[in-house]
Image (cartoon, rainbow over all chains, first blue to last red; front, side):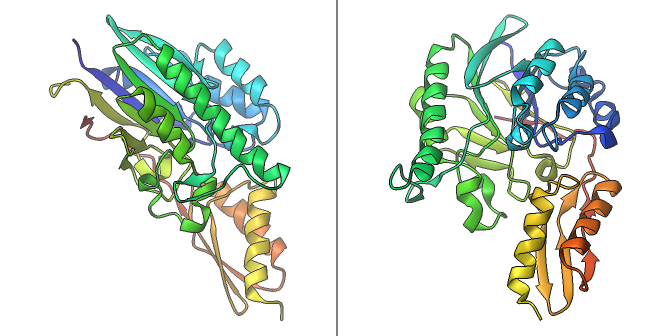
Length: 242
Length: 81
C-alpha cells in the first residue's frame, strides 16, 4: 500500500489583515503532501467575513483539505455559517463526524471536530454539582462519544483524529498547568484509544510542544502555528520512503 | 496603588475579550508601574493593537510590548511515523 503524506497545521487565525499571506506559503503543497488537515482556530473572531478569507486561502488546492473549527471560530456565534462557507469552497469540515478521503486508491479516514476541555485523568472536572459544571463536562463527554462512534464507523486503510483541543498533557508542556483543563481532555484520547487511530492531530496550545502520545500509544501532534513555526508539517504514514 | 495582581488579570481579560484583540495567549506581568506583554502574534498590526488595548486597561502604567512576530517558514523536513 502506498504511503500517505499528511500535511497538518492549526491556529492559522486568518482575517482581513492576513489575506493572501498564508496562501503564498502553501503554494506547491501538492509536491510535499497528499492531504492538508487544519485543526481549528481558522479565524480570530469567528465572523463570516473571516470565514470567507479562510475559504479563499484554502480553496482550490490540488489536494483535499479537511478542517475542524476551534474556539475562536465560535466566538461570534456564526460557527455554522463558517462551516457552510468552507464547505461551499470545497473544504471538508468535520463537526463530530468522520469522512473518508481517497488518495490514489488508499482510503484515509479522518474523524473529529472541535473537541473541548475538562482536564486530564486525576486532575479533571467531574459531572457533579452545579448545572454549569455538569454542562461543561457533559459537552466533552458527548463529543468523545460521537468521535468514538465516528471512528468505529470509518471504513478506511488509515485513521486520523483531527481536533482543536488536546487529548493529552504531553503536547501542552510549556503552557501554565493551571489552564490545562481549558486546553483539552483525556476523554478525547480515551475515545481514540478505544477504536484505534494512526495519528491524533490538534492545535489550541500555542505555547505547547509538538509531540506526545496517548495512553494507548497513538501518536499525538500539536500543530498550532506558533508551535511548528512552519506553514504546515508533513507526517508520513506507512512507509519510510515518502 | 492598585494591586499588580489585579491589574495583570484585568489586562489579560481585556486582551482576550476586546474585539480588537481576542488574544488568549499573551502573558501579562505587572511589576510596580511597569506592565510587560509577552507572546507571539502573526502580524505587526496585531502586536500594536494588543499594546493599545493593554494601555487602555492599565492607564497610567508603562506598557512594555515584548511580543514577537511568528515567522511562518516554508515547510521543513517531514516526519515518518
